[in-house]
Image (tube, rainbow, N blue to C red):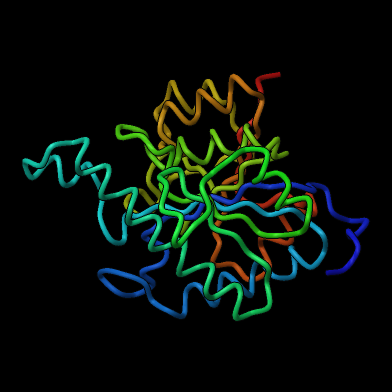
Length: 244
C-alpha cells in the first residue's frame, strides 16, 4: 500500500452503503457487478493510505420494518435484518480480497466461525494496520437502523467524517425523483435536517452525529472516482455541518 497522498484531507473515514445499492438492477439480493464496482472505487483510496471502515445495510435481503408491517414481531424482524447485513458484508469482503484488498468483517452479533466480534480497540488496530474493516449486524440491537450503527461506529473509531453513499447526488429540499424543481443543498445544518425531516439518515443517527460533531457527507457512489474526490476534500454532494 502506498504512502498517504499529500492531497488527502480525510485520513480515516466511515463509508455507509445501503443494502439496496447492492441489488444493482435486480429486484432482490446481490448483483455481483456492484461489489466489484465498489471495490474499484474504494481500492485507490485504500492504496493512498486512507483508513476505510464500512457499514452496509441489509434492505436488499430483509428489512425489519417491512416484516413488522406484515405482522412480524419487530424485534425478530430486526434480528433478521441484522443477519442480512452479515451476508452483504461477507460478499463485500470476498470481492475486496479478490481485488487484493486486506479486509476484516467484524460483527456486533457473535458468529466467530465467519466474522470477528466487534471490539472497538481491535477495530481501530485493524485500521491502523491498513485493513479495511466492515462492521456487520448493525449495533447488535433491534430498533436501531444501520444508519445509527454507522453513526455510532464512526464516533467510536474516531473517524473524521461519515460518508453516506447513495443513489442521489446529495440532499435536496424535496425528492428529486418526483419533484423536478427540487434544489440540492451544498451544505446544511444538522438542525435543519432534523426540523425539515430531510431523510438524510434517521433522526437518531443525525442527532448522534450532531452531538459528537461528526460531519456527514452525502454523495452519489455511482459517479466514477467520487470517493477519492471526497476524501481529497473536494466538494461533492452535500455536507451536513454545524450551524455558523
